[in-house]
Length: 297
Image (cartoon, rainbow, N blue to C red; front, top):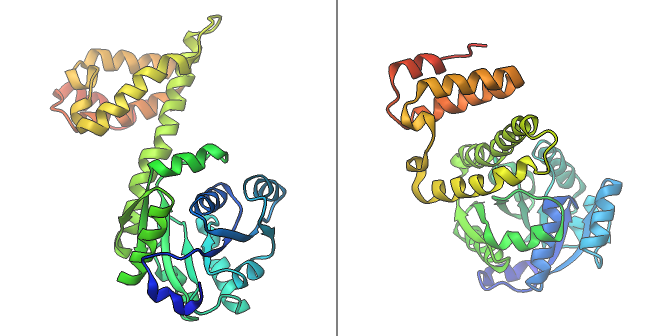
C-alpha cells in the first residue's frame, strides 16, 4: 500500500511492517500481523536476547537499525519500554526516515498519540495500540492475543478506523480510549495484573512454609481457589467476596495477621492493606476497622 492508499481504509491492504523493538510485545504483535498476511520486513533488536527472539519468532525479517526499519515500512510498530519511547521517537524524527503516510503505532499503555507529534508533524498517521495482556515471550502469547482487548487512541476517526481494523485482523477486540484517559486506563490494568502477581506470590510464599516436607506445591493448592475467585469476581464484582472480612470476623482476621507477621512482616502488611480494601466493599464492624487502620507492625 502506498501512502496515498491510506484513504482506502478501513478495508486494510497488506502492509509491510517494521517493528522497533523485538521484545516480547513487539514479536507477538509481529507474529499476529503476519498471521493476518501482513509482512514484517524488518525489526530492530538491540540485545542478544532480542536478536535470538527475532530469529525464532520472525525468521524472515531482517534485523536492522531503527531508522532503516522505519524507512522500509508502511506500518511502524514502536514496542519499546515506556521510558524509552520519547527518545526513540525523537531519534526517528531527527533521522528523517519515517515517510509521510506511514502508520506509526506505539504500544505504551499510559500514553496516547500526542507523544507521536514529532512524527505526525512529518506526515505520519499516529496510533496508540496497547494490548491489555501480560507477555511471557513465547508462541503462546500470539495465541492468547486473540482473547485480549487493545486500548486504542487515535488522532481522528480515520486513525481510529485503521487501528480498529488492525486489532480485529489480529483477532483481538478494539476498545477506544480517549487521550485524556490513557493514564487512568493504564493504572487500572496495571493495578489488576501486576499487583495480582505480587498478591499470589505472597500467598504462595506463606503456604510454602506450611508445606515443608510434603509432596504438594503451593501453586497446586492455590490454583483452583484463585481461578474460581477470579471467575466469580469477573462475573459478580465485590459480591464474590468470601472469608472472614466479608463475614465481619475480626478475631479470625487478627489471627491471620499474627500468623503472617510471624512468617513475613511484608506479607502481613500486604494482607492488612488488601483486607482494608476488601472491607470497604462490605459493612465491617468497628473493631475490624480499628484492627485494619494503618500499619500496626
